Image (cartoon, rainbow over all chains, first blue to last red; front, side):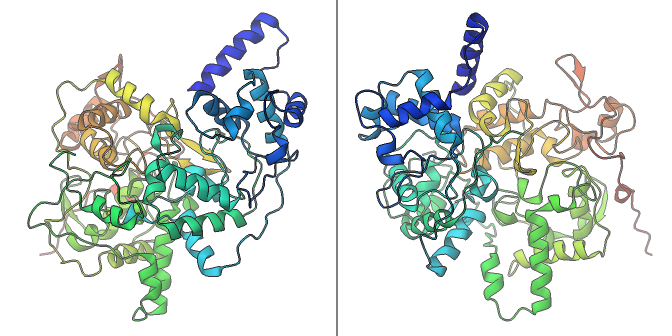
Amino acid sequence: MLKRYWRLTLAGALLVSGAVQAQGVAANGQQIVMQGDGSGAPCLACHGLDGVGNNAAGFPRLAGMDADYIAKQIRDYNSGNRVSVIMQPNVDNLSEQQILDVAAYYAQQPVPAAAAVSSDAELLTLGEKIAKRGDWNHYIPACESCHGPDSQGMGATFPGIAGQHPNYIKQQLNAWRAGERHNDPNQLMTGVAERLTEQQIEAVAAYLGNQQAVVAEGGQQ
Amino acid sequence: MKPKYVMLAVAAMMSHSALAAEPQVPINLPESKPGQYVHQAPTIDDLMADESINPELRKVILKGHDIFMNTQQFRGKYVFNDMNCKTCHMGEGRMNWSGPVWPAATTLPDYRGKNKHVNSLEERIAGCFAYSMNGTPPAYGSDEMLALTAYHQWLAKSAPVYERNIAGRGFSHLGKQIPEDVSYEKGQAVYEANCAICHGNDGAGQKKDGKVVFPPLWGDGAYNWGAGMTRIYTAASFIKNNMPLSKSGSLTDDEAWNVAWYINSQERPQDPRYTGDAKATREQFIGFHKHSRYGTEVNGKVLGQHDNTGEKPFLKPDNLKPRTFTFE
């Protein structure tokens, strides 16, 4: 409910000043993406000005991701709810408005065309099964049951994972398994991640990585 | 770990996982009782690999699976709310402790207290359409019914017929006795902390691109007042063993009872058996409604005292007629 709290706060600010933009300003966000927070590397050094990221290095795609989801991750790095020695020093000087601006900027970037990272048909078939049907004998629900149709994301809580870089997906699933990532609301991802086998992680990352991402538009209709 | 839970499922998962350490989010499911039949329902992969199955039968079973997973393809025809079969029968209807559907194929025809006569498998499925899906069933003998019954029966493969002592059947392992200190306020607190993130504070669930992702728990899109899930004990056990998704058994029994009480204290489409008066309908079907809050006063209003049938343009589907077995 942090999101709603912020909205309330911002709505209050709007009433007082009468002119403040409640949401992030993408143009201002672009400046921060290029210049950084004043004490670290600029966002574009890893995520690119276009937000496409880099599979080989495990830098996630941010282009077209849900703005509220991106903002929450930055806040979590700053609060210690999500731990990354790379991210934390690069975002720790951002104000709340700057966080919203960066998030708005990347959310508005067009998603890149799907890259056929994997061509291993057997692996992709197994990955598709995990994404669309799950593996209930091991209590693994389908990715889609929370991340939405075709795993394109559900609002601010469940990010689009279709068209995300496979190396990043693997890295994060392994971080959950190892107890190194724990900023999932209600631990909804932790149990699933730790029940997946290495092969299933490899497969689902390959399958999702091969899919065309769609720009997030918020889950609630 | 509570001793009443066996760690069988967890043990299987731990050997499945590369990390054999204590899981951060264990699956805690109830233990089967000694002497109970424990079924392992086959999967669609097994169906595809089974060369002994006639291709025509395989086609019918696959269609049954498709209807089960995406019942919304019949929205406005058989289904008038946001439910799919899989919404309540998790894991493709195969999972113990999650209302596995195969026992309907091995224990029916049988007498059913809900409608006081002997029901066939088709009539049992029809009940789901009339109540849980707030709709009307496909005709008996139709392609849709054939497909659904074939899927049920195939899931029951190798199970003993008319064996009723079945582990993980239905949703009632917490028993039927509602704890006396259950309350709306406690349930609301549990709901907001654990359920609202997906199902929403208003219980309306979430859709995307017209597809139901998180089902509504009350309101017009939810199961109606005649659905088994309106019984507090059914909802409590379902929640205990299946919710939040991927965290089975994570809520305490007390939390499950309270949140079931809260969810089933909200309005939903009318019971198709409605007589025009919710209190009278409750009394007429008291064997069922003694477990629900229908026809009782909650927060100053009598639950179910309304003419709202949701999206459904009628109250009672034709299949709910009484049946007298007249053969002599």
